[in-house]
Image (cartoon, rainbow, N blue to C red):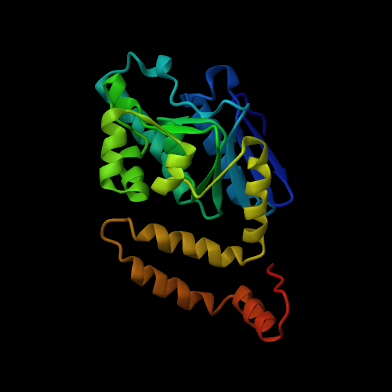
Length: 258
């Protein structure tokens, strides 16, 4: 599969998806969003892929935002369509992806870039990372889930302040806010993420898929997350991974999940 704006590499069960527009600080345009979706679709059906890591090309930016030049002259209808299709094809698609998705934030993560990182299941940032939602400084609001996911991660008050002031926060502030899980030096970022990935790969990816859905269900209107958990917990008893995991535990062995 050939791409112009991203790079997709699959190695040892891990798909590395790199936003590759360094001259634009990896800004998102429609073409890039479509390529991200197509790459993730390929990862979803590829049984060799167990975990996805999303990052940006270069050392300056994860994704510095949306490509403003592309939508500066959009109408009301075009703007709404931009947000709706972007959320469906990429941001919600990532949030509900059945395999773990980790954002390796290696620089600026602003606007759509922070929204992309927040859609991932969790985030690891380098010390040079700057994160924010500056949309109100452009006379618009976050349109790729930022007004919804940021409060879930940092709380309503902090989210309101970040959106209203359009300010950037440092990686250290981001970890204090709960916006990222870990912070490390830029040259250590890949190794840090790989270490987490290896821990994930030791566990039942079938169980992890069920856990992703159960956690997400807690944030869906009209869905009882506790009921989703109970249902998924019960179904786990009928899987080969449950048999392997419990048998290995009782025999004091390391499980070999298929």
